[in-house]
Length: 544
Image (cartoon, rainbow, N blue to C red; front, side):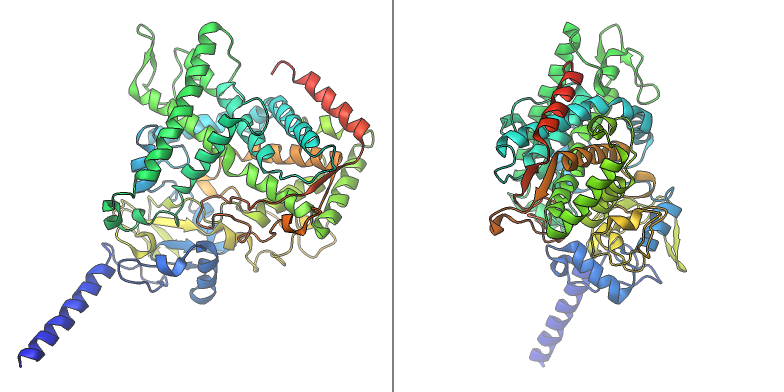
């Protein structure tokens, strides 16, 4: 009898322990499939290091939208949830590692901030500074940075005779563009410059702290008690603080000496009446800022430094990687022919700064953004209103768990599997094929993509505010690379790039793709003409 009582008690304890560890503080959403999980760990163990790929496979079994984190995995589901309901999907959740630890000193970037009046004003300021007319005024900066990178690539490759890794050149290209826009400051020297390497490395690590798959302590609160859980985030927070403070102090010093160049933060610092938020103004008598304005300036600085390295370098680098392949060289030739047809006098190098009149290269950029999807799992959203999905109601104002794990939030969290969406066979014909022609209206292929071309910049109310700038950076870089070089495979097969969207990532759990190292050849098409283009560009940008 005693044994039976103990056995029943043991079974009961195990049963209720499992129930406790597997429970959430919100009910299931009726009408939306749920992915079965593991007590305490939810779906983390199943997702492993390839969240996008695993979620894509789940979508084949459970449908395009499932819970407990609401994952959207098809083009049409994202269109419905992110675009048709964009006013309801305007906020962001906060997470322990990034928001509480990493961001404790500098605050949040605009893209990671929950929606409130402050975020609204910061995003509005950023959108104004990055709209199409504003971006056109920044083209001299892109002229300088593109020329600097190509000139150094030319030297390091010994005029195209030695294979090189393009990674560092285009990290600098993107970072210097952002630094100049925000601080009026650029990092000089070669790609081996220590400040350049420090900023790109730290920003990469900080970006990973935003990843939905890299920080289990965000989803399992007990893990935060582990002594080392915050050591690395604190280290990179302090390293980031150091260069952000240095950059801002350098700008303030230049302003004081009258040596500053027009830039976003400089315009705010110099204008005593500048306002990012209604009522947050510079106190002229003491020349000090109220805390709220200082925080918002820091947020804009954070955003400009981090966002510049999120999308552009990965797409540029992997675009180059594909162009070096056998099929890529065929695409290169088509692009080169299209450029020569548009600019028979050989002036594409300069004209690409003022116009975008090579449709094939525009289509190439779009296909690169779709094919590589450098942020495969977009940053999550929080719904602020009820959302209807095929008869199911996703309620606002209730707790919604990341992967069915206990986590207190004020609203539902939704995630967009950009990888699955950009490879949705119901929307894109042969999505595994790299095909710029899908974006040409006169294409001879059966498919012509209309409407939203891809979700490389996210979607809806919180999509990337810098997409116009990124598109011009990509377009200009590829026009110049293709006119200057024939990009070819490396001589050593061990240096060849990995040409799969997920497998090419050196850190599978990262937020943004970190391309695995590779090399390719840059064979100069016309040395005399290239030297002329570089010289003319240097003359145009000598005062920057």
